Image 1 (cartoon, rainbow, N blue to C red):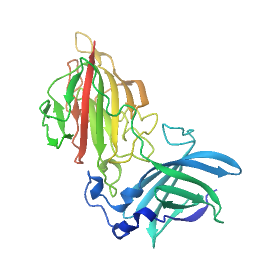
Image 2: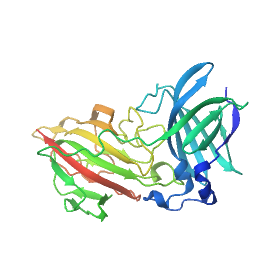
Image 3: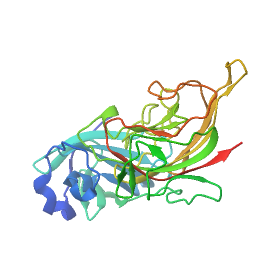
Image 4: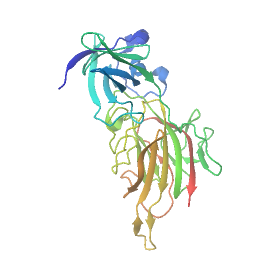
Length: 326
């Protein structure tokens, strides 16, 4: 049973920016100071609600859709990777009309000073959720002794096509060094593109050996498919969608084992990956039976480079290193 309520977002802290709400975002944004007012509302909220006398933890993701539209996703138990009980999330979309956002939902919501207050139709308090800015448990992890440091913010010389944006690496680069088996750490930031959808929203990819892609995409609040962030492209969706909001720094930690070939060049074992996204395990020892369609390097027995795809959207990288394995 679905109940339709008018969900009012009383912007409070954000009233000085109301004049910009409703303006379409025509370009990707990499600087939060240049983002629209919707960006300040977008994000993750966590708190407790009371339903039928029972207190339940609730995680909420508000996703900016452009033109003052939002997707709201509610997770019982907490946010993905932080308490969500795995039950089907509650999803609702809506648009601002005269300061009100109409959604198909179960409550009236107000937001002030980064606190999301939930009330029933009669005005009774159901609960409050405070905005949180989660960080990966591996964010800023330093390379151990013996690691191959590919990018430390000082130079892009380790990459063909390497280009800097300040102390950050721009997408569309291929490592000059080639590798076989390794554990990789990298950090990436998605651009804010609220009017875009699907594969046009913060798209890039991390290709092990230039062959096997773990997708990079603004999939915040989405279902988590194999062509979305954390997906082994066209092979397996992530066990959990751990994508943070755009402009937040995120991490991939990828343990990669190369495919094996016999003397005749016939493949005898698939490549395998274990992947953590923002410190949470999303793939465990997954066989990857083929190279990605867009891979710049064909599948084969030789080592290959790390390739960070340029899919036409600005993405930034930092703190890239790996430890080679036998």
